[in-house]
Amino acid sequence: MRQRLPNRRPAITHTLEYNGERYHVSVGYDMYAEPKEVFIRGSKTGSDMDHLLDDAAVVVSVALQNGVKVAEMRKSLGDSLVNSVLALVDAP
Picture 1 (cartoon, rainbow, N blue to C red):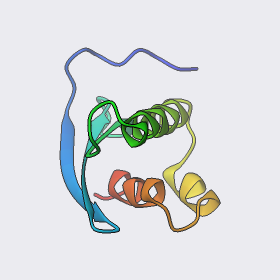
Picture 2: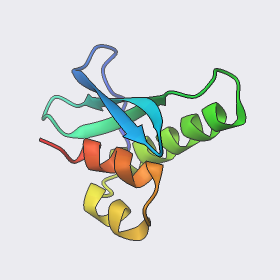
Picture 3: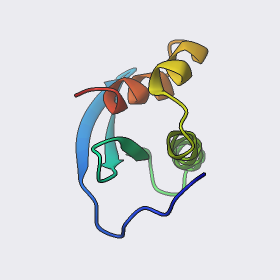
Picture 4: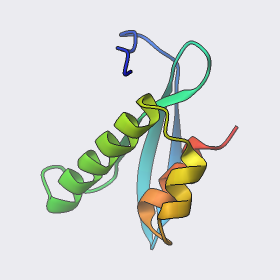
């Protein structure tokens, strides 16, 4: 069951280069240092890609908050930006 995360929580922001574009990926953690949310920035604000990245981050965050393992998500995806983001989420 999904539980509300505290308003203030630790997060790490990574810079990711994918297909010549730079993205900023923030990973938020719960009190047990487990990744529970993802934010992705890098496209022009308001662009279609910006909206797609927001939606992808929400889907990944909801999956994490419902116990889906990062390895399971990565196995289901091909070589994609989202898979590269998940590699950062899974990083120590």
